[in-house]
Image (cartoon, rainbow, N blue to C red; front, top):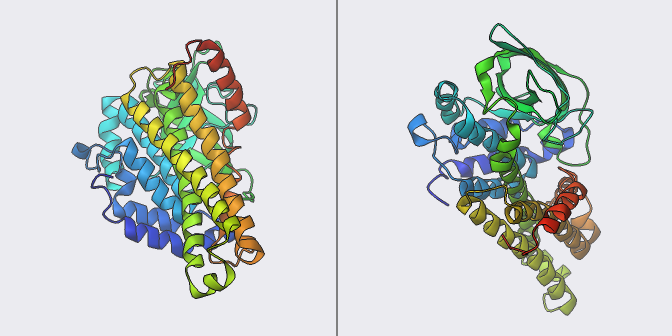
Length: 383
């Protein structure tokens, strides 16, 4: 971790203070977001010359893990915001970068991603949402079933069809400020877990200047391959691993208390074997996360099958193993500390949150992609 952490202690304290309420009421963690703004961490990925922290992808992973030990929703909100920021840093026009990056560096802008559509779900590489071009403007009319933090965002990165698209794969990424859009919440948010992300369905309509297209018109596929996809899988995996590691840490601290020593026999071979297996799950995901991070930072061609296989495998394994680790912890500590919402270990919330991991860009879909990629790589070149 580089020197990007001043202020994170206050963010963690604030997140912990409101986490139970945010989960119970399925409300966005506004206090945590305000603390992230004040700490400068919303500007983690903004270059120093624009007033940001100049943080790396590794810093995003580390901060996401720290936040998710306390509240996975806050960790996911942070990681997804950083994904949007890095996309603007790398692909926005010089004019748009000069306009946005100083505000992002100050923490004035929290960014939301709008990539879901009712007809296609979360599939990134197609769109069913046309835009109308005219007079140097793009008219957007977007119906999205899930927009994480959309009611609190200051800006949005929105996928649409390119104006002259002849196929659903000709997708553009468009930036819009909150005041350029009319925003309508079209439904509620009462999920099993990840309740504090407040990922409500929204309709977004409005007009933006045509120079607010990010990257080439119709060229979102390359952004997904080079940046959007890898950052999503690294950030999500860091959030899931942080959540599971925090859960194990709380259980181990309980076992060392006087109450815990009465309840748990630390010489029990069954208990020690279970702990070893849980820790092995987390160490395996951590090793895969760090290796994938190194590969992403060191690879010029992100479209190479071994690299794509590795990135997808990270997401799949992190989703499955982190959920399994916390499920094992629930079995280990039993009903009172594992199942009840009133337990200070809040394993119940961690388990509900982690149940979303395999569904967040479904593992089944990624297994199919990886099967096709594996068939292409006859040399079995490991990433």
